[in-house]
Length: 203
Image (tube, rainbow, N blue to C red; front, side):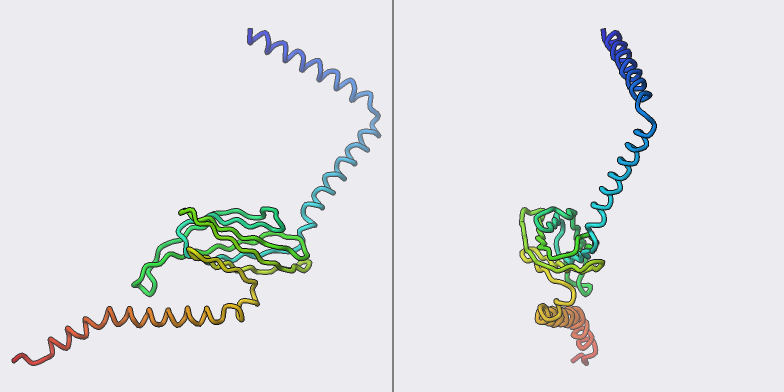
């Protein structure tokens, strides 16, 4: 039964193909040339609309302390990027374990003013969102920095971060110095005490 149906389908397809060839033979050559040129022009116009409209670039730089999270970015309400962030555990100053990761991507974008929405969904169900607006000139590139921690996300354009995050950066540097000094003291103080005890004269 299946073989008979398959044979009928093939015969029907052969008839349709023969009819199409007969119809195509009746169409003048000039008509075919016009049709092909029209089709080519339509394809070129579609490609121009798709690529020429995005005449600027958005450079995305992400620094995070998350083990795993899904990053999504919307430009004027349209999803422009979606990817996964992965953090690796390392020892800060060789002593304190911390999770850190980074991401760098370049996204094509049209010139003009846009609103960007950044969303981070961590593996533990925590969701963080923030929005920022930016002006893009033709044939230009702007860099957006995203700083993400477990319960905090900050956005900032390159060049505007110095004044905005100067205090935060100074506190971070100061905290790093204190952590380094504390770690050194914890590691070296017992050695120093043991050495002093071994040098002390026995009574």
